[in-house]
Amino acid sequence: MAIKNEITILTRAEQADLYSPPIFSIEEQRLYFSLNDAELAVFRSIRLRAHRCYFVAILGYFKSKPVILDIAYSQVSKDLMFISKE
Image (tube, rainbow, N blue to C red; front, side, top):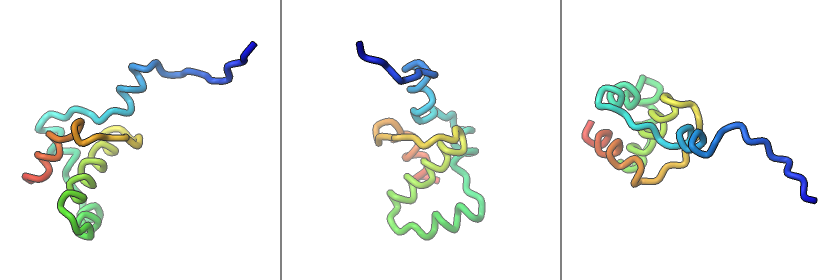
């Protein structure tokens, strides 16, 4: 008989909610994607614009929920468009 040593704390739906990128309103985008002086210094050190946008997006998501997210472009394209326009 096989012994299962895994403990499930969160359901699959709860895991998906926790580890998926948040869906922000316009006001939340402005709040979470704004940069302080230290963040702006790092932002300016990044050469490529696409990488800068991803940096702002990932940082904003981390500010919203402090977990490391595995994001795909299709999940965050609206936020990246917002960031690139700001």
